[in-house]
Length: 634
Ligand SMILES: Cc1cc2nc3c(=O)[nH]c(=O)nc-3n(C[C@H](O)[C@H](O)[C@H](O)COP(=O)(O)OP(=O)(O)OC[C@H]3O[C@@H](n4cnc5c(N)ncnc54)[C@H](O)[C@@H]3O)c2cc1C
Image (cartoon, rainbow, N blue to C red; front, side, top):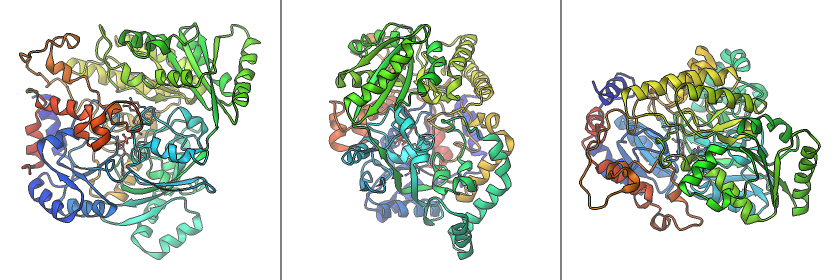
């Protein structure tokens, strides 16, 4: 039995609404009802079949709503016809959380506006499809910013950030632990059953009142309170308190009375599995006018990790780490060749950023740290950057990590899959050493870098995801890596969410009782399991639905061009795009002009590559998927 038929059999045995959806009738009804675009053709479905992850699931169809009424209508029609739904922003998710056999609602084309900024209250109201940098530019006019800034900040959306509970370099400046959930004030949400409500923090008195009012919201809140009360002890026991990047699992801790029964924060990070967000009200923080970057060079990345707590004492606004493997890989790919030479001597580096209202103030903070470091034994090499352009280039080196390490000349292809585990920041050095040992045991090679100031470690690993033995090896590794991070009191995901690549590991971190509570939480919002099913809760396994996988055997086509950098293979060239979506940025740069004008995924470089991927014969068995969902095309 091939991998794909095994996957189909497993999925079809689950309770995810009806097995067959009449896609033609669904599309026709949607076209009549909404102002937005309805695309159920094979090409559009291929464009939305994958995200930034290793997974690929062909959707039933795509809806691009023009307004919130379109979304409400779409959900109502999908409900009436038993179709599953999945919201999508920039589609840069790395865990498979943004692909599914569902009707995809693309928020990014039209519902992408900053609706209001209240500088006094430091609040922003946004539509879910708003790109983070668009909000940041608006907020800067008031010397404010949205603290968490993923490396994809030029093209990821706030809806996606709330969906994944994203974080970034400047999470250190944010409220609470700096995750997106901690910056959420209120959400306007839509349930699959059509209920609309606004949710946020709720005092115990308000909670009583809402429940007593007897509305659908009251009914839901009563069930949430009951869930919280039944699991409160276990939540307090198992949710780590010294770990800024606990992104795995649902935020059930936000329902605790001491955290204000914050339903909006509890729904953040649910990866489209519970509700559809229609609008968000978000907290902004002060944005320092000027920043200074100090780079510290240590003998290796482990030593750099050991020094994280010492550096954090000096209250930086960003603290990132990178190793020599990343630098070597970038040299091989000729990425930022000039910028890499800016790094001081060393084999592992910490990039430390300080903010101030003037250059003098920011530099003064950096000097306090350099003075301290000079006074201790074995100080690192140090370089303080004065030039804004150079500082920006350095951040670019760090931000390029996940994309730049996908295909290194002369090395095996590298993939996400264990790319954002997190530990308490004072454990970074030791965790890196143990993680490297584990990687070596499995014969894997990779660079190690990330948001060290918050204990989050990035890496792209050369998993073999194209053979049965390779996929099994990868799954065995995940199992041990899960044990390792949990032994450190860490989180399986430190910013990308669980999606499908990590969710099967959740029992290790939370235990069976809390994993059951996640299922109950989802069922309160989505009893029919119609919202992005089998991600996070009752998940597909990490080896299912792989974009490539053991079933992927494309023929080697005769082509005019020779593709020397792609093993002489056109089909291998079509695997180049790993979906990071950099070609969807709009604010600056030259890539991708056609996307900038049309805001169409099909006109982005990523979209075109995904179409080519689809059109190369030998793809995973798409026909099987269509048959399973009864999709007759439209
Ligand atoms: C190269 C690279 C670097 C990255 N670096 C970082 C990083 O530094 N930090 C980080 O946190 N992440 C990082 N990521 C992961 C990802 O870019 C972020 O999590 C990002 O915030 C996702 O935004 P998006 O708009 O692409 O979301 P999408 O992928 O489109 O969606 C994410 C989730 O949100 C849900 N969602 C979207 N809109 C709605 C809505 N209206 N209602 C309900 N659910 C919704 C989706 O269903 C999905 O489950 C990186 C990814 C790549 C490829």
